Amino acid sequence: MSPSPAVQRRGSRGKRTMPGTRLLLGLALLCGCTQLLAEASSWWSLAMNPIQRPEMYIIGAQPVCSQLPGLSPGQRKLCQLYQEHMVYIGEGAKNAIKECQYQFRQRRWNCSTVDNTSVFGRVMSIGSRETAFTYAISAAGVVNAISRACREGELSTCGCSRTARPKDLPRDWLWGGCGDNVEYGYRFAKEFVDARERERNYAKGSQEQARTLMNLQNNEAGRRQEHLGL
Image: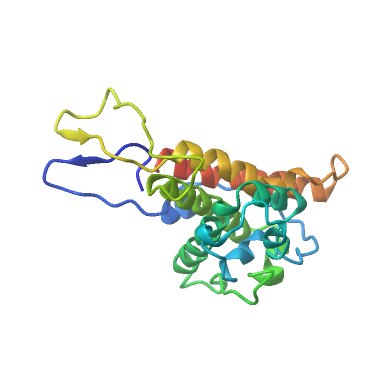
């Protein structure tokens, strides 16, 4: 995807994918050594359960959101306001899982999914580099999917990116068309993905608070990589 209007060199076309390799090898993601109780479910489970296409939603039909597994109270409220976004959040999570499995395909833990609710199981209760990567790539996946949905006219609250031509762009590169709206994708992903962590109220200095801050940091790392197109 492109972070701006369609850019291509004369005579060539490029295709960007999720920056999984660079996230894994180029970022020193925060990880801890604490082990906490595993989440019973996560919004990642949207990747494992079929989600209705946007045109199937009925405006204000709260039962739709109440039936989606893994959502925190804050994420459920966002679902009620932006029901048409949910299918793309699910697609972002699904792409993130595939990318995770590809990056870890030759490792002992290879992002195998174990069920439809916790997705990765109890391994996510450990503050490890693998967990850090999973949080980052999942956040990046939501940015990617929402940004592309904006470009394709699938969401009523956003459209194409209209970023101005960069001053340092070589003259033999064309600039125009309809690009992925990464600015919107970044903002929405931040609101949705971080909601679960931000609505918690752990004691200052506790292991639970440290883990929450770690998760937020890794979410931001993933969004930033996707936002900057790295």
